[in-house]
Length: 531
Image (cartoon, rainbow, N blue to C red):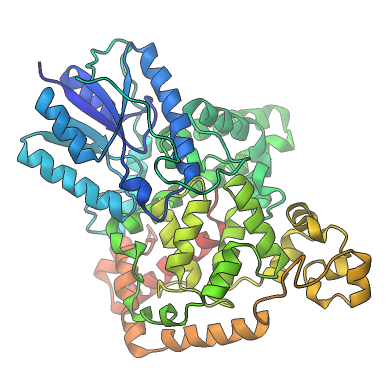
């Protein structure tokens, strides 16, 4: 009997699952998820990712059971598993979604492709997001994204012929067995499609009214943001179904607003409209890594090689990851990450900015550590943003965030800082964001000791930032660095849809203007990109 294997990776659902639908069209199917020790040994993965996946696999198991099937979870490296399976029960097709993951998964997928060719097996891959594999031209990328999300969501038939593994399934390994020693944030979001659908519903029908204007402050963002990012990262929900559900809700709100004139309907519609634009940018940034996998570990603009690498301070790095920088807004964000596995985008940008400029840390070790802290770690977005915020793309205006100003702007009453840094709860507002300026008698009255209960700042923020910016702009000003900018824009920059045809037919001056438009668009969305 010939059959197809559906290889689940970061697509842990049945609804709108192109690989599963294709496999079903060929006949019997075997549903497989492989716990790969090699993947879980990478520096950018963490216990919270594994636990979220296990929770999602339980949902997927129950969903398949309703169709009369079974999810087979096997531990081992994928080539070894496929070889053993094929030796005992030969199969004809391997169906999976394309994955834009880290360097390890990229090489793994290439190896799977070679194995399939050697064994004359059809390796059928399908788009997971609006990301285009082997993209040669960014000019028409948006049209491709539109076409992808406008397609109907795929559904599988209720009755499917399933195939079981030729050997008995074993229990998945524990996080400890995989040597995932990090703590699992106690207040992180839980995995699974059902949890994802509940979050989607609450956002569409309740929380979206505060999306516009509410996603920048770490006080309001936990409710104002959609909080759908981990469910998209691990494929509990498909991007397309989220877009469709959002548009349907916007249409309902439009009708409600016409009937009731209620302001909340208008606010929700505006929020959802902004949210859909961010789903587009979600794929835009993943496309960068898909088109150039090397940006996970090398500067997008190679002219910045050597700018920070040789000056790396282990003291600064350890203080940063332990939340001991001495800047309360930074340390509070680290504390929140430790407890929840999430922080809003504005604060993520601030963390990377502080690490990159006043602390002058290279983005690679900082990015690897932050990847383990973000439950919703999506490699394409993560590494693109790490480079944008640290100034190594060569095409974006450097965004340098002062953590003291960010505290005043987004936590004016100190509620966030006091929540996550209990030692500072008695500190008066005057000194809260700069506690090192407290006189000794005020410290005594607040029962706090600088250098013990909270660290002194690692550096003088203004002096260190000024020095860092001077170093960065010295590199940006080099003729060879300026000359290399166009190649980065061509490969990664956004396109103005109105100017695509003009770029090809008019002068170099217009082409230069188009490059600037692409850069500005990226700059705007590096400030507002959030879920």
